[in-house]
Image (cartoon, rainbow, N blue to C red; front, side):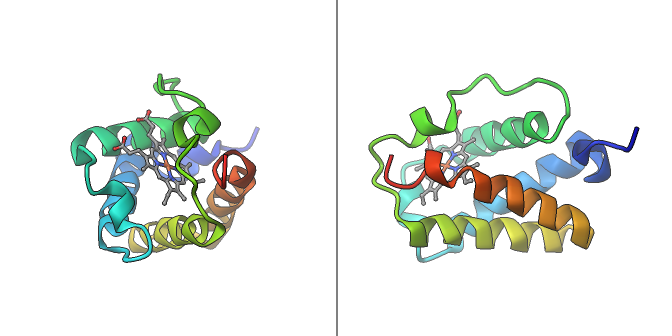
Length: 119
Ligand code: HEM
């Protein structure tokens, strides 16, 4: 059987680094930074890492809510959604992730749009 996306991304350590970078890029992204103004960055990075690790086929760490419940009532626009994907792509590239794995992660994230935008 071929290696899971989790393994091909480099496992928990690499994914934790990528997730932290995604959150850092959000804080610097003028399209969405205000959304995270009151966030506890350390906690958010941990939740995003656990979600990412679990969602790519790693250990089952994520204990948070489903994506629709997390983002319900936030009135998130399609433009904001693309801004999050831009930051994810930038973080994947910063960490030297291969083209194929970049595409797989982006596709998985894109597939969640109906659970995030205007829910
Ligand atoms: C596929 C895209 C997205 C994924 C996978 C995602 C994932 C997550 C995760 C895992 C959490 C943490 C939940 C927890 O604490 O257990 C979260 C929280 C949050 N997300 Fe998203 N998200 C996405 C898109 C967006 C977008 C487009 C926005 C708006 C710009 C957004 C705004 C937020 C906010 C404001 C929080 C709460 C932060 C906090 O509690 O400090 N998310 N998201």
